[in-house]
Length: 548
Image 1: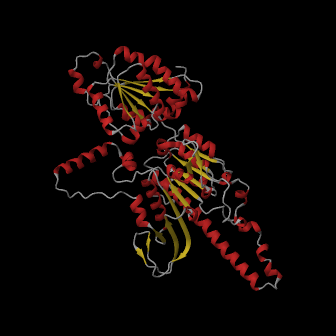
Image 2: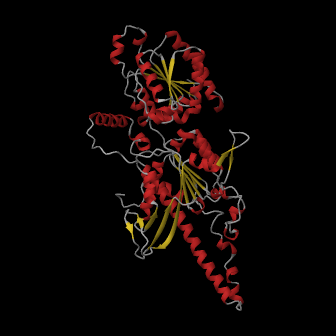
Image 3: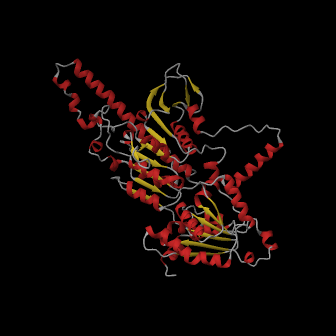
């Protein structure tokens, strides 16, 4: 930093807890601090793996020396008992299997960035195997050259770039054309410290150049290593689930665990971009965490004299470090951390308070009255049904009575979408829907009919907005059936009001179309996390706990 410190202020807060292997829940990641968080965590992973591997190698050499000494001088009783005099527990330096670190990513592109950062931290001494294959399978996809003379292709390319720019930098970093957004992958990575570069054997160094070997010691990194010969496993939750589970022959819906022994000795579990994994399928994350630190089923290749005592006692989960990194706090993420955080070193939770002037509602640019309606419910299990009941009894009858057109209903949960869709079908309401599962033709047709006023209501799911970032035109009235998880989604959707309708509405003579624009958000006291990010901490406390 400019002050000469090795760590940034955020890294200095995180490092003490991370270095003592306490469980960490960080819910304040953003584009500005993502690199420094990733740098600290990748350094921690490398430090743990290289320290463990160096200790094992040192013990291997010492045991070999003592064994050779006792065999060559069997007549000397002192030398024959040197191995025992060292103490049995001194050699307990490993787990049942070699993998020590598990890192979960949402996409291949995020995995590629993390691995590149680790290799950069290793310096020029790193010798990397299979780097070209890794860049090909995980790096940015090959782009076609722009030297085409076809005017139509040039126009389409320019239009494509303009559309991608509208989706925002956050979306492009995850799903843009220049990143690999595949979410089904798994990768083993082994690190061998204190390796002497052998002459004549060519490898890629960190600079990307061929290294013929100069005799200097460094770290050998092998990508695409077999799991049981890897130190670090980098995977997506769905990729690891495909390896560790299989369909039950008797019941196709039931999945039974297969070989999970390679996860029996995980010391550090790092879950990156938890907010993105939440949008994919958080059940896969819970399924992977359930497989960690179980007693192995195959014990033929295990040297029990080298296994740490807490693994033998079945207490590996209490010595495992769990690190969850997210851009926001969510009940599902908090529940997972509470359930799987068992570390004897304790926990550290870092959360950022949202001042009122930094809340996302301040980014609303449209002049519209925004109403937040609290829905009363007694338990978290009743949130969905209570919200649907309020919508059915108070909101929907008013829409039908006024014959209100151009109404966009934003629904965060797909389960809530199914409930609202069934309710509208039962009431014979004319509507269209845009979901993450709909075909492109269905989405285009539905958006056109909604803009033209041929359909009065559009249902729009939160996951569809996250993955596709549609710009919905034709809305004058907005209903949030539950608050968005991402705070920036609230102003983005509100700012869509009157998009594409400013000229059309003036031409229409229908009094309904001339009604002032409106925005209604339904929430409960269990939506406090989402509400805080939208309106700020102080307003959230009053809106959740207040009588009115």
